[in-house]
Image 1 (cartoon, one colour):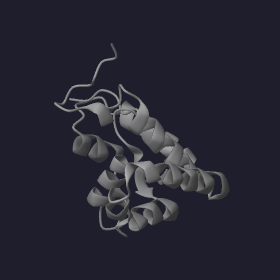
Image 2 (cartoon, one colour):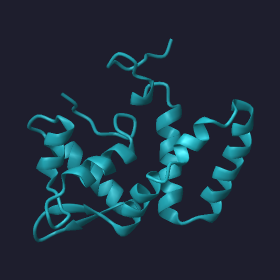
Image 3 (tube, one colour):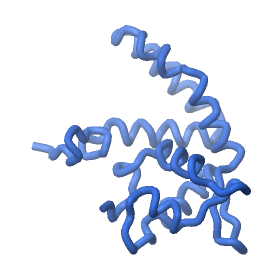
Length: 145
């Protein structure tokens, strides 16, 4: 069972998708329910801490009185855009042309909205750190040699 919920353990997008898939009829979910969906045992502090950080980035809102989380409109927008099929089109781009794609991405990072820029930066960190979950092939992290 996981004990940590760092960027290198779970992508922001995966956490957003988990929340979106398990909200109640009002669009909210508790920290305990998120933790259960992610496979955490008793200690849910890591989940609350990660959610609070993502709240600062503008991904989640927190209802203090009910102690429930939900995606912000910006977070919903990111998930909606994901369904447009852009990743399928990118898969067909030749490796050499990806440098130009990255130039476009970094331009959007610099000139776009803060939420998108933050998620782009964090996705790059997740995907390029050798010890992140992105490098897992058999459920274990790849160790640096």
